[in-house]
Image (tube, rainbow, N blue to C red; front, side, top):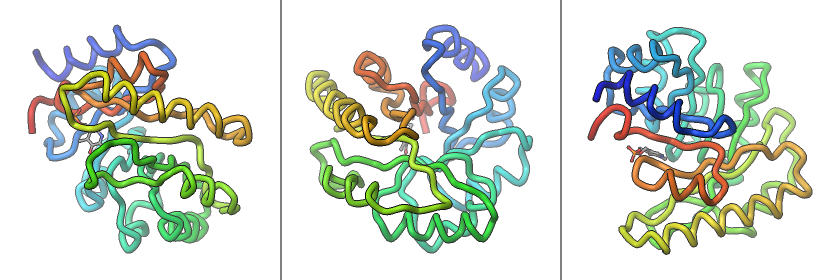
Length: 212
Ligand SMILES: *Cc1c(COP(=O)(O)O)cnc(C)c1O
């Protein structure tokens, strides 16, 4: 399978309401161009420097998503162009995003990352952390939903339970958050379960570009 075929296959099989983020981290520009040629416009990266370099050299109508953990001191590099930050996991970070968005005269859209996995190592907020951030007004940030990563396990029931929890949290918050429209959950190994549980944005890397 080629990158192009993988993209076409996903476009055909994902429902219209499910956004596809093609996760191109570590992959060369040639492969991104191949996906672009198949109509893909949303790409996700998890390292600031790589994201900045790719943005500079690739077509300007690409929407770049920052999907990985973001350090406060690096927000300034992506603030001019990033179209969605998936993994906001602290108030300190969102304050900095707000500041840099203002300097660039724009509103940056963000998702709050919720910790749903069993592993300690995955970043993310708990419910109280989410509510605390939503209570504060950040004029240059628009929080449009939630993102989460399930435990890396073969236990499908565990993964499903975690996605269900995130969907329930999303639905509950949505009642008081009119801007909420995106629930980012699901990667190459678990996106089918994520979609069954209500995801409307999947982040897929290796199933498109091959193993890293
Ligand atoms: C790498 C990455 C993905 C994509 O992972 P694949 O298993 O290659 O599909 C999705 N989300 C985040 C946050 C990632 O870092």
